Length: 467
Ligand code: F0G
Image 1 (cartoon, rainbow, N blue to C red):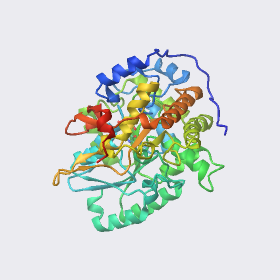
Image 2: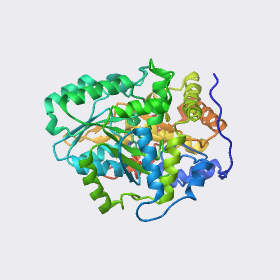
Image 3: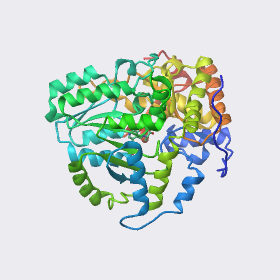
Image 4: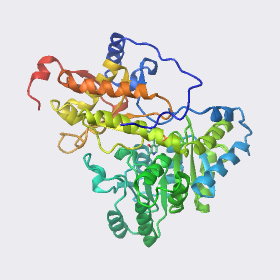
């Protein structure tokens, strides 16, 4: 199978340090088998996240020299606002230092305790910011979106029937907005179809509720619409984006993804009343409305990145690179979530390591082995991240899926490096019996995966029948 080759050449390189297996073994042990605590310069291919890890283009770097660092009225703000209006179509543009601040400003302004926010699936920070207001974050993705084996082309779709039911029950007063995350990160980076956006908008209109996008990976979503949805093959990704955003009333954006920058975000909205309140809050916590917590040069990098991300040669390569890794693993019989999404390949750790029960953290065991044996950093999205003790029974509750995310940074790794990742995972799959289960030795009361410490079970413990 052939995939599109790199539509760029390399002008600046960042040397990678050669690190021995022994050194990695020592580092991961000192880190308490927690990949977040390993120094990044000891990693060969870092697939922890696609967020803020993109390589900027020469045009973006040149833009940094054009930074206008005026406290008020920077020309880069006007450039950004004009670019955002051109792509998204919303008149009011509020820069923020990253996506979660856009979420925080929006929810602090329009939510009250007891409200409910429907979404296909909330990303962690979105959920946390909704809950921070005493409101409920409700995930209403279609059932196929939760089935790792379903080949539905738009597994990110929000179920309009579930939405209609929720809005009928709750009423407009308790639902100040409906959100749609494109692509659906927490569901595997799966796209949302234009037909689904239209259906969701119809339901919203019936109940008089505005629709706001979480637009982090909007270009990748629009690319999937062009490739997969009938009637869109001849439309440009830019045209598709305009059509999609015209169906909503605004968006939150982390430009660390499809803005192709290392830091930045924004809110773009139609509702002038919200904008007035949000702007006042912005001045209190982020900065003046024409810089929103960023330097003028960052705004320029973002404006240029938003244009570049719509380049279809880039998108074909970008999503092709993810698809190539997925195809390589799938052909070798490695269990992955199918079809792959736009930004990451997810390994299904329960099927990968069937000899390890969820209480022994199979996903994290895989993450540790990938680093120790090959210098690859992935992240666990499973028992370690979501496992918790039931307050009433004291029993551990584990999530349905134990996944390991291999998120691919944009324009950073060559096809050869991605092939190295594929070959490493396949080798590990052949040798899976040597991977041992893990046990927690420290956990924090919230978001434990960031700081947890673990140790490997001994041979005797590993040989004992799993509980
Ligand atoms: N929404 C989605 C869908 C995201 O994936 C993220 C970040 C955010 C909001 C928050 O944006 O990080 O700029 O504050 N996702 C990153 C990830 C962290 O690794 O998937 P932020």
